[in-house]
Amino acid sequence: MESTLYNVEEIIPSNGTIYIDSEQFFTKYGSNVKKIGSGSFGTVYQTSKDYAVKKTKANVCIYKGIPNSFIKETLTMHFLNHPNIVKVYNLTVNSNRCEFEYAMPLATDTLHDVFIKYGKIDLITRKLMFYQLIQALNNCHQQLIWHLDIKPENILIFNDGTYRLTDFGLAELFAFKGTEHTITGSYLWRAPELFLGDKLYDETVDLWALGIVMLEAILGRDPYNVEKVTELLPTILQLIGSPDKKKWPALYSLSEYRIYSPLGSIKGNLVKLLQNEGSPPDEIDLMRKILTWPYDRINTSDALKHEYFNDPIIRPELKPHIPEIDNWSCGIWMINHQVKIPNTAEYYIKSDRIRITKFSNMIKLARVMNIEFISVLLAQWIYTLYGSLIKVESSELDLLLVTSLLIGTKVRQQESPALLQLSRNYIAYSFIKNRIKLEDIQQMEENVLIAIDFDLVVPLAIDFVRYIFIKDSHIKYATRILLLLYTNYDWITNYSQYSLALTSIYITQQHFELLPGDCLFELPTDFKIIDDLEIREYMEKYNRQLLSGEYRNTMSELFIYLDI
Image 1 (tube, rainbow, N blue to C red):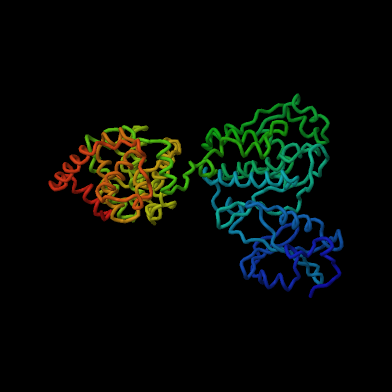
Image 2: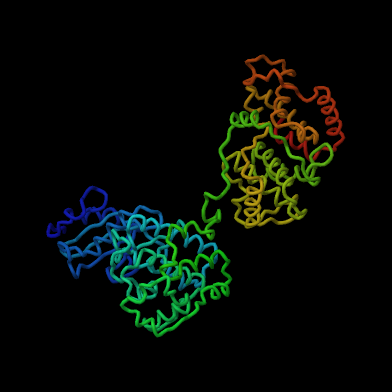
């Protein structure tokens, strides 16, 4: 039963966003069914509706019966709206039992539990974790909130792959540099200046604590391994070395300087320790800039800019931008840029036609994966362009083929093809010589996107042609002309995509004797098509080759695939 003894609404307004009464709280979040954690300020339960509820007993009532730390923690976690900070949904007060409860999302684990289960964490996972948590701290610090109790137990892991900070019971709000602060926090994660009694510390003590968490993830063990608190400072000095007294003259005036002074000059072993664990140079550099004395320690904003995080997996914004494009934007782009297919290595285009084997395999794979033909043609473009820029070993041609098809599909259909949704971890078909691992495809995809300088907006003539004509019969005929043009090495390397498109449009208009209203594009008056007679001779040559069976595995299959 709810009492009015504690007038919570005077402290936390009941505006429908945080405070609700006990009955509403129970209905919304369910009953407590399982204890999942406990600490100095309360116990955490899993509810029947799969939420986490923290329940606090008010042994010491500071303000109108409600513990100050509880109010601070609740409001802070409700106010900080960040994907890597645990969100408090609602709180309630049961005055009869002097209990205070708030609801949060339910995590799968704490980082502390993960360390116990698995020990060392792999490089890419710890990068992701470290980046998310530094983002969370940066968000706090920008809003003048210092956490002051960063440790593995206060880092929760969720099913969506996010790491989130929790437990702001010791946090300092409206914290400013240059003012005195209470020395607090769990000993193992305290920054060295706190052991020396520095009350003018700044927000980077949070980053130090997170750096120690990261060090444990790298080592797979407690980085200190000491039994007494008094052993911590000497151990930290062994890790990072003695402070530079010239850079930090305030050292002499610290209240606990006497603890440090007998220790003498020590050179730290952090770099060597990380090298022995196989840490890459950029990880070592970042750790060295975090686990150091306050005068050299970077802040969260600078840490986020460190090259350690310049990885598309960590920062998706670094991935090449693949824009959405349509037929009309393709047409405008073609008119403005007049792009040609590059002169390519002999392994791809040979003599006057596309080399049979690779393009045929691309078509077969596209049919198996139900990929539209525009994607196949763009894949052909990517395959060709990359091959003209980078020397590709013969053993990697199948990998490049599959990767080009993947990228082509992403650009044209805005989604990954089924080949990346297979349950097994490799691609293997009878017409592809080697098994191709998905991790190799992903690496090749990154290589290709970087090599071609993100220029995947380059359209193909077929985009433009499909937009120009209204009737299917006209579209199919123009497409067939285009495919024939594509098989001539001289044409595709000497004429722009736009010229190929206009040639196809012109021949189709002439063949069907089309009127202006039958086509959505008026050919420019100064347009010079590829020699009409030459094209017709080439078509006759192609028909003879088709009848002789020379193209039976490529173009004939292509036409069947396109139904043209």
